[in-house]
Length: 319
Image (cartoon, rainbow, N blue to C red):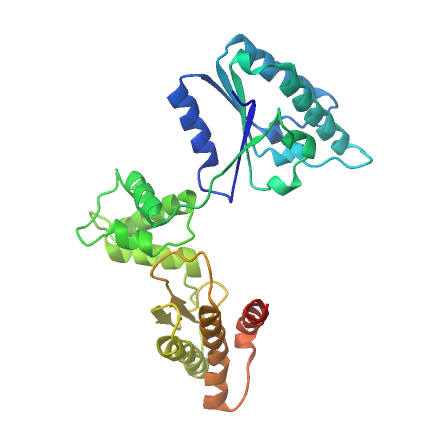
């Protein structure tokens, strides 16, 4: 049996839930600790907690020890240690010693989760310690639909609420974000005094999460008109240029930090970006400023962030 397994990936896809489900399926004792709980102000306390944890697991084997956020104590050690970093290194050294001190026959496996595998100490990753690495990626469309079914089991859905369409509209969402989306939609339905959650509630909740909540800002007619020119330029070019994501909604209602938003939603997940797509995105970003300039003959600061994004994508395209 392997001694240690590292689960790594972006925040939210369910690394901790995966560790718990492994323990449940195996029928072994499960000991879960966050790495930050080991490091204290008093020197030696973290190492003592590590020793006690492994000793308890040995007495109750077969057992699974799960250490969440391993990078809190497993960061690469430097040439000098002062203050709190010395305590962190003592705790790390104790983990290395304990993992060398038991064999695979003892029925103990150490699982760990981290979002930053590149900062871990090399001694942790050598064979005989955490030599198995499992990538926990963000869910695809089929996975998102299955996750939404889990989180809507106790939520009354209206007939027009399609989880398949919602899964297609949420590429890049993690399990935690999907759970939050369902909760936001249920809250909106409750505020609207509805008996069930409709598709409109999911759409509004999604836009609130992606674009930010609507802000009641008092804008003059001239400002609203200039914003409409700007967003209209985005929308028209996105509809015309081949390769761009389809336009889902255009609004001049201020959301988050933006005074207006043109929301483009892809049909499916993207794992690779062709040159045509990057070119379409660059054109779509630039044309908002161009529309405002053609309508008023002057430039404004409203397109500053879009110009910055377009320059980044342009560099990617040239590369």
